[in-house]
Length: 306
Image 1 (cartoon, helix red, strand yellow):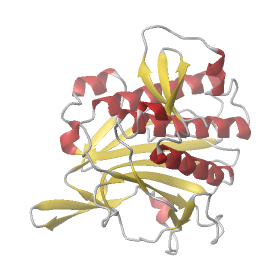
Image 2 (cartoon, rainbow, N blue to C red):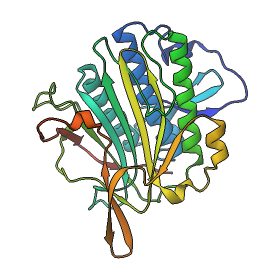
Image 3 (cartoon, rainbow, N blue to C red):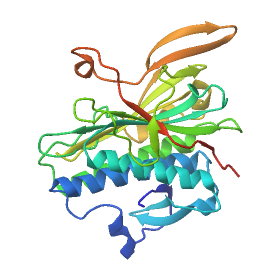
Image 4 (cartoon, one colour):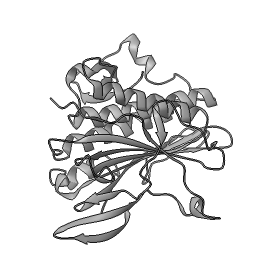
């Protein structure tokens, strides 16, 4: 399971294990799929490690250039990390079938209100006619078909760095949190009865709500010519206060937009909530309205924060 998180290390490490992170060449659908799945896994591990969701024992270590990657693994002493690994494996199943449109990792605090989130992460996928691509919601940076494998790998490493810097500089989450993941599909190709391992039909079709003042961040983009993945982070504006503008300018064009979701504001007493629109494009919304197929985990577990 190639799930990873990173932290800086003072020296460049060259080990035989580096080759498991990214394929040496990205010229086929299969090679692109490997890259996309590993970037998804690395991103999820980055989020869970730097947000302090699981103990150190839930991670192994890999090195990539001057980055020390913390790899989320199946830690039998931490049920939460075991569950996340199963969710990622479910995403892989849907990706391999070209069904998966978007995976949303959401964090909430009230078990009676799972639709009311305090932080979420969107991973959106597109598949080209020639094969897969990966895009992590880009602002300026993108890589089209024909770009060399080395440039694609360099762009992937840059995306990991940007996500790492963002996670490292966000303010802390509440103490008691619960994780869930929702999977959205391409309805025109996904069988109605399909569910990836570890998932079931979503029992709460209502829109997600965000407590407080949301800030939407578009992290970056990479395209292999076969797949595209987009990653968007939504968090509470108060957690952004430690993230200075100089950091964002110094480390690439991460886009920050306050209340940057297409969301509708509601007043409930003195607490503001926002209905979240999960960033489906205009062309995806054209044509007859059809109930969107959504999956949720079979089992939910609180994060094992130590």
